[in-house]
Amino acid sequence: MFRYFLGFQVAADRAGWLARQLPQVSGDLFAGLKPQLYHLTLCTIAETRAPHPFLRQRVARAFEAGLPAAASIPFGRIVARDAGAALITTGSVGGVRQLYEAIVALLAPHEIAPMHRKAGLRPHVTLGYGACDFTAVPIAWNWIPRDLALIESHVGHGRHRVLQSWTLAPPAQAMFDFMADELPPPLRYAA
Image (tube, rainbow, N blue to C red; front, side, top):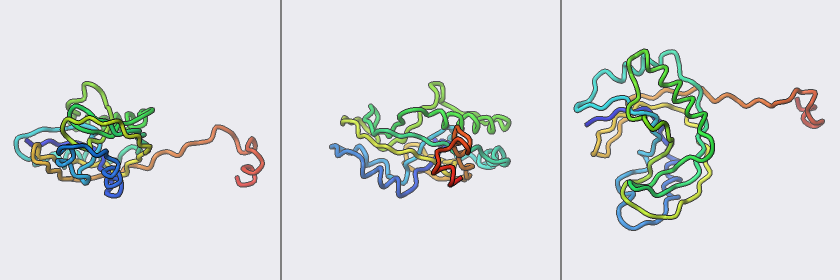
């Protein structure tokens, strides 16, 4: 089976850093997932028995007008799960939820809809498969992905292929909640 999903790939330098943060556990927990495959899945948009010949073009048309701004994703710890290990978020994920909803809205007129999202968006990066048990590893990482990728996964074969990626608009810069003449003296002079 071929699965097509939209998500963010972890850059090679960050993937290597994450791999070095993993706890030492017995067995082959992390053998099946190479750091270059680390990604955050926003949504699966198709599952087919054979490669889908036109999905990439349909998604590209949906994004012709551009993509919304990137959002910061606040990761907080690596945890053991029944099916493996994952890097999970901590704090508010409202920004990435808004990004997800904006992407889904761009896809809708092209009859592309997310699959398997009944429980909502729970951003995480899978780091390994297999039953494991270890104490959570704290990680403080605010990730701002730069590109949204359409990825084809050959399920069960450990192969992922990026079909196309699109650059996200930069995140909006936060604004201060005061006026220049209300600034303390050193900041007033710099303004």
